[in-house]
Length: 339
Image 1: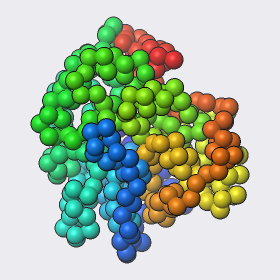
Image 2 (image 1 turned 90 degrees about the horizontal axis):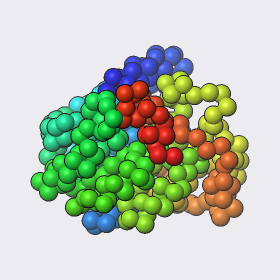
Image 3 (image 1 turned 180 degrees about the vertical axis):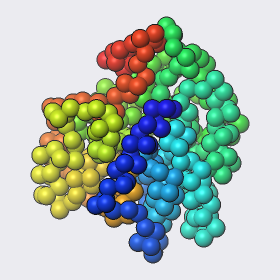
């Protein structure tokens, strides 16, 4: 949680730079047609293919961005308590309900838990902050341990059994995981009563995650791509080196965007959609939030898709190195990702 607080603090520095446009609700005057394109989970619930991510947003930005996005047609909002803005997201929901823009049952709200010894307490706190009676999706945010040592504590399967109980109680209509390797996910599948409905992972042309996507598809688990644009505003936070790729600046992405008369972001989001994933890009800029909705009435050609799908520089941009600890359970990236 301290790590995410650090990210939020550093992102506030970006917001202080004069040339970066600040959000204004006055730019959103009309309500758009709801974005209803969705995938059906194996439990018959549906997940909208385009969502709004809220990582690295201040409370004010989260409130204004969620209000604007829903008025633009978004119905999928991705949250987490470690983003430190769920109260403001909840206020945005209440404002939208009050204005009659949307009903609760028309939204798909995701939140997460980063290891807690009391997962049920965690979801009830999230529900209180979001001012909701249930979540559409609740995820184990990462295969994290509550304390250092040779093994994950509580064990992942014990964490998952609590998730199953939350599903049984109706607190979460669907449950899933995030940032799990195939090996760690297999450990859950071998012992679970309710298998994950969704797996949220980083995915874009510079991190295809092919084996992971194939494994989840074979299990009937829907995959959501977080950071589908390569999270360019976290380069300093993640201590990326100059040679690491920037998907939004990739020459092939730029070439396809020019050819299709689309933005690089639209090309990257369309790429994710055509791979069968949902995508949850983050933006606090109204024009970009709006632009990101233009990904459904066109397709990438087989040639352009192949060009995007064969980028050679594959690298994890959200590496989660903050989870490494010399005492374990993850002493190396190999321990964490199993690859």
